[in-house]
Length: 317
Image (tube, rainbow, N blue to C red):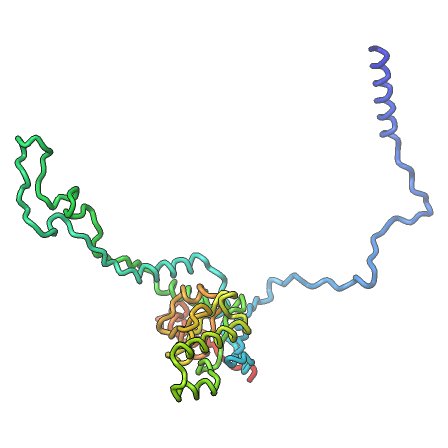
C-alpha cells in the first residue's frame, strides 16, 4: 500500500512539473500574429451614432397603393399619415374595443317570473300544523312545479363604458395592423363585382331558374377568390363599401363561405380583425378615418395645434 501511495505521489509531482514548464519562446524573427480581412469582405462600417444636437425626424407618412377591382392593377400611389395607418400594435386597446362592442350588442331581455308574478291563487295550500306533512305556503313557491323562479334573470343593460378616444384609437390600430401585414387592399371608388355579360343577358331574359343563377354565381365567385387567394382556404375576405352594391352583396350572400360584404355603417373593430383580408373603397377608408380620429383633434381653438393629420395626398398617378 505504501509503494502504491508513493507511486501515485510521484506521478502527481511529475504532472505538476510538466504543467509548470514555460511555453516555448517565439523566435525573434517571427512577426506577431495579426488579424487581417480579405478585400472581398471589407466594407465601411455604417455610422450608427447620431449627435445629440441633430434633431430626430421620424417618418410621418406611409405610401398607400390604390388598386382597381378585380384586376388589382395599381392606379395611383398616395401618402397617408402614420397616425392613421402605421400605429403600433396595442392588443390591450383592441381587446377593450371588442369587449365594448360585444357588451353593447347584448339584448339583456331575459325575463323570469317570480312567485309573485306567476298566475294563480296565493292561498295557503294546507294548514301549517296537523297534516303530518311539510309546511307549505302558496303553490307559486319556487321549489314546486309551475312555481316562480328564485333569483331568475331580469331585463338589464349589459353595455359598458369606453372612452371615445380609446375606441377611435382602436379603430386606427386595427387598420394599421392590417396595413403592416399587407392585408389591407384599398380600391377605387365604386367597388362592385362585375359579372359576365352573357350571364346577365340570360338573367334578364328569365331563361335561368333561381337555382341555376345561384349555382353559377357561387362557382364564379369561388374561382375568382381562389385565383386571388382570398377564399375560405386563405381566411376569407371582408369587402367594405360606402353603400350597398347589388352584385357584390348578392354574390357574397350566395358564396358566404369565401367572404362577406358590409356597408361602412355596419362595420366595427371586430369586423376588421376577423377575416384574413380587408378590401375597402378609398372613400370609405377616408370616411372611416374621419369618424375615428377624436384623439388627434383638440377642441381647444389654438392656431396650428390640434389639427387632424392629412392623408390621401397623391404621390404617383
